[in-house]
Image 1 (cartoon, rainbow, N blue to C red):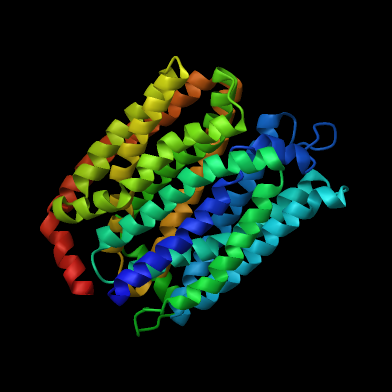
Image 2: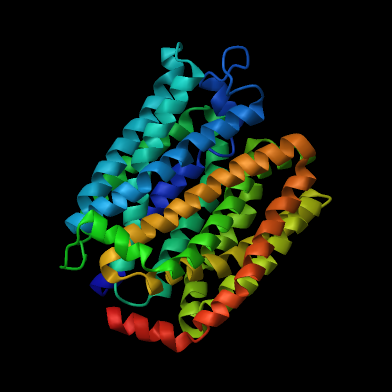
Length: 410
């Protein structure tokens, strides 16, 4: 096997492990926060099960937002990826283990639990974002490399949801213990892959200035924000909606989420390769419009089978959009600024997750689940419609432009 192909497979496996560990917690999040001490009588963050779950998820992604850029800057400035991934993975494992130990301690207020969650998120995002950046550094086509990242993300989410549901049935803290073990493995296995960072070094200020001079990066960042917003919406509101509307338990909810994540994962690589051939516009713009309509269909589904079928269609459409969006970041970023460029994309994505939790949770609490599906699906359609003129003006519909860019990095 060619070294790039081997490294692509290893790095994709590491991205999978990080995402798998994250999603393990989602199907049983309401049970988990109760076990960790969410108490409406003593905490302003736990007035209801929805509130406690929302803030538990928000704490992690707030840390992602605050720290992902620092990891990217440090990596680009030093020209190293592996040491930072090892540090982030092992510290993240410590954070998960500390959360798992909370019930044994028995006296921590829920605010302290949220602080532990912030620490875990601040460290885990370094391992996640920089592993994706190592995929960006590989030759072989941006669409292929980001397709590998996408299939890892999708498989991690697809398998994490049902496995997390089953683990929760064994013990509410079992997903935390498994997540800690997986991140230890990530820190150990990243040593199998060589750093391929460019030789040129830049200061942190020069890196930030370089990204600032590339306003076109705002296009994939905007789509990354909205796409992750929908994922955050399904992780929190979708989970509670399926349990409320159809009476599903944690295990069945995990299987319902897998109806989205399985096709989303399995089609990432071929869809990424397709975008190398036909360009990014059709997969991103047309795919996003259809994706938004699919979200509306999930909220309107009258039964479990129809909701599952709608989730499958949304997963297919998400697979069309995601790798093309990530590949567009690589197309537009200078090779010396990939760490901070991917950090920016993950920052936008983390803000999207936060938006999905906060917007979806707030709208669902105030106006009901139907209104929440309408708002989130409508945002996905709106971003695609608004950016059509930008795509056309930049002439990024020509696939040969991206193939030329790929050859230039090879």
